[in-house]
Length: 292
Image (cartoon, rainbow, N blue to C red; front, side, top):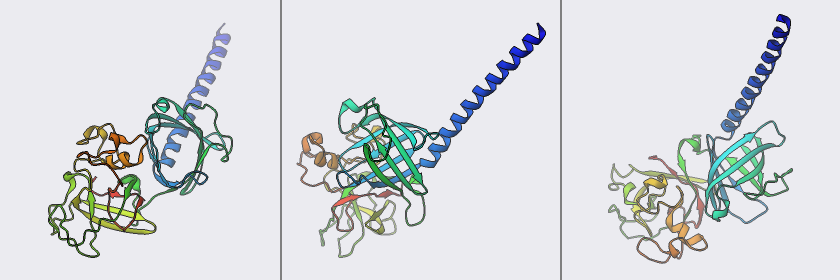
């Protein structure tokens, strides 16, 4: 009887040890994967429409911004598979409400600072077997010129154009000259006091097409003046139903149907979205808001 109890105890101990070991391994895999993906990745969807994508991994959350769509949600990974698996549960998106609460199944491959992702539509519960099935993305981990990870600083994707207006006056009283370096943001909350020694209290680092510059915030606009889109949605002065990082002017101009029926806060119809003005461009850029 005693021997039987010992044998049962030994078997139970082995099973318990095995279960604990498996749980421990699964936990370790999840933590490792979250760590290796942590941060900001920028790239393209090579075989689809042009434009840049930003993928931001924060612990178990994932924020994806593309040229015409945006998603937020949580993710989990299985690194025991080859290629590795990632399940993306959509909490909110700008495409269709039917995606909310659905999961998109991905495979991914990480090679140093390069990341390949391939996934299917949310709710379609079949994972791609190769990187030629589903929507395919090629991404690169982003660092600024000072080799500081973008994960340490707030970065979003916004559409920018050149301000111009030489001879005009900015919101903080600066007279615009040729070759000036400053930006206009759609909120009075971050406007620098003036263009003197206090004129750099709020700065933005902008990278585009191989160039990089740090510019102070000297102007407000050009459309909205109460759209602090870099803050959490619940803290925005207006447009709290938009995702963090999405300017109202950009949503009004790019979305279909247009957000806010295509108007800004003053009911002006959006004809072009211009949220961060620098470089003389008209394209998506990735500014870093250095005061956050």
